[in-house]
Every structure is written in structure tokens, then in C-alpha cells.
Image (cartoon, rainbow, N blue to C red; front, side):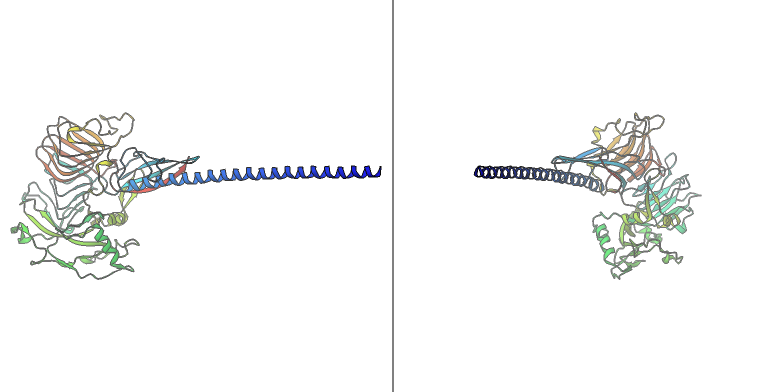
Length: 519
């Protein structure tokens, strides 16, 4: 009996051990399963996070690519889209102009990028400012106002060589800058009684807001020009960087001689082709390169240096270059020296882009107080490409109904607000049909206006890369006007710049990011 109890006790112990082992194994399996599930979830979460980060990076890369494309002038002025260079599944959409002004507009950029299980959509709003144009200005190789009814109503007037008015622009804020001389004359010779005659310096002019013989500006992107001796915009910029050490200019002994732009020619009128650079009897000799501080030290009325700043510790680097100027009275050509600075540096130093009420470049205080420190800007050829424009037409393809519209009486817009477009005319363009438009028009050739039954009228900017000829008919520009050559025969041309007429930024641009959000 005792032996049987002993066996029963041993059997019970063995059963308990089995149950304990089984329970331990179940717990172990539960722990292992839990660990595997948790690890799987962590791997999944990590994968989601990785996909999210990669999608965000791809979207942000698309935004940065869009900013670079806009800045370099490789995005159309209207709505456009493209695929990101880093991810062929990522799309970037760039909206058109919003709240446009004379010098810029806002644009919305949205980048949508997938990566694995994640999709990210990033939107930014940027301010695109033009790096090409001063607001609502008139620019030409020479400006000859043929007389009433042709007129420049207002806005700054810039000329590479001369400006001749028949009557003063009526608006008191109009400034005139010429690379050589300014006059108001009823005939080409300025011999009529009451004419102002020719003035070559601001002190010689009877008008307070005339600034002849001012400096010229060239773009940083301008190529070297062996004919004039210009080293190119990049070369001049590099020279300025290398020759300003600790805020002090270093010496450069390269000299140039010749006649200044403000030389009144005296007896040189008998020499239609004055090739006096270099090596002839010259009335000027100076270092070919240098820095201008805009302190009036040269004329004996010193003021604090206006062109010195942390960005330009030595002032604006310049180069004296030679250019041919044409005498409007005789048709003769004269060669003169012009002090040439970099347009981008001058613009950044003397102008600022204000946002309200619309994006517009305005003069900084230094240029308001001392307008003689202006510069004749270059032609806005740098960065202009047909691919940036909403419409690219050959002259025979022009659609007169697709030039945009301005919300005024007689030209209402269907949307109730201005509809700005950019148009590129690829070739010589003869306009014999009335056109109204708003935005910017670039004519890659000559433009001829003839036999119009109603005006050609534009609210914005027109750039003519050749010659404008107004034979018969009326042409009205509310905004900016740029033409390398101008001939008015029996037509009527009115330029009314200087206001707040909006245009479309094209070409090289400044881009300022204003907001960012993800959705």
C-alpha cells in the first residue's frame, strides 16, 4: 500500500512538470510572437517614415528645381508643369502670375511626390521679380520725339546716345538719362528760337531732371566685345572681386585714352568718324578699370560715398569702354568713352523691390536724393527665350484675340480682372489690324505699324529687338517701351510709362520664397 502511494506521488509530480513546461513554452511562443509582431510593426513604421522622408525630399527637390528654373528664365510665364529630375513620378506645377505689378508677381508652386506607400504634396508661394526691366521706362539706342501728336507722356527715358524732345514730358516726375546729350528742338539742328540746344552735362541743362553723359550699365551675362574692348560682364565682376582687398581697391595701371561722352566735339564735327581710341591726340586718360564711389569727388562738391556698402566695399567696379554715337543733326558717327558698370550690382544697390500695393522696383533713398547716379540700362536680351512665353507666333500666325486684356472701358475681361499674357513674335511683324492687349510682347525683329483703323494699344511692356516704324495709324503704350531704333513717319505714337501698369516677368528673375505649407 505504501509503495502504491509512492508511485502515485511521483506520477503527480511528473504531470505538474509537464504542465509547467507547456505553460512556459506557450509564454515563450507568445513573447516570440509579440516580439515578431512588434518588430514587424516597427519595420513597417520605419518603412513608412522612410517613404515619407523620401517623398518629402523629392517634393522639396521639385520645389527647388522650379525655383531654379524660374530664376534662370526656363519656365513659361503662364501655368506650366514638369516632371522632377530626381523622380520621374514626381510632378511640379507652377501657377501663373498673381497680383502682378510693373516689376514682378506672385506665383504658386506645388510639388507632388510619391515614394513607396507615402505621397507628399508641398506648396510654396514665391515673389518673382524681373531682373531685366526698370518699371515702365522708355529705352532705346536713341530717342527722337518727332513732335506732336507723338509724345512721351511720362516715365523715365533712357538712351544709349541722345534724346531729343519736341516738347517736355508733361509729368513732373519724368527723368531723362542719355549716354551722350539731351535737347529740346523743333528741328534736327536745334537752330530755332526757343530751343534748348544740346546739353552734355547735368549742370549745362536747363531742365532739372535731365541727366546726359551718365554712365552705362551692362549685364553680368554680357559677352566680351573686342570691338569696344569690353571684357564682358563676368570679366568685370571678377576684376572687381580680385581688386578689392579688405575694402580697399588695388592699383591697376592699364590706361585708356580718348574722348569722353560729354565732349562737346568743338571742332571734331568735321570728323564724322572719330577713331580716337587709342593712340591719337586725346583729351582724356585714365585707368581703364576702377571703382566708382559716387561721392562727387571729381567735380569738387564731395558728398558721402553713395555706392559703398558691405556688398560693394570699394564701390561699383567700372570699365571705360568705347562706343560709337550717331549725331542726329549730321548723321555722322563719333567714337566716345563711356564709364560702364554692372547693371545687376547697380540695380541691387540703388533700387529695391517693394511688394505693396503690387511688386514694383522703386528707387532707394540714395538715388532719390542724387538721381545723377543713375545708369542707362542694357537691352533686356539676356535670359529672353521664346520658350518662356504663353504664345510663340510667326508674324503670319498672330491671333489678335489672344493678347490678354485690361479691365477698362472698351476692353472688359471675362474674368473681371486683368488677364496678362506673354507673346513672342518670331520675325519681322507688320501690324495692319487693331490690337489691344495686356502683358508683355517681344518682337524678335522689326515692327511696322501701318493703316490702322483703330489704335494698337498695350497695357504692359513691348520689347522690339529691331526697329519700330510707325507709318500711319496710332500706337499707344501704357507701360514700358523698348526699341533699338525708332522711326515715325506720319503715325501717332504715345508712350505713357511711369504708372503702375502690370507686366509679366520673363527672362532672368529674382525669386523670393514667401510661404510654405504641406497638405
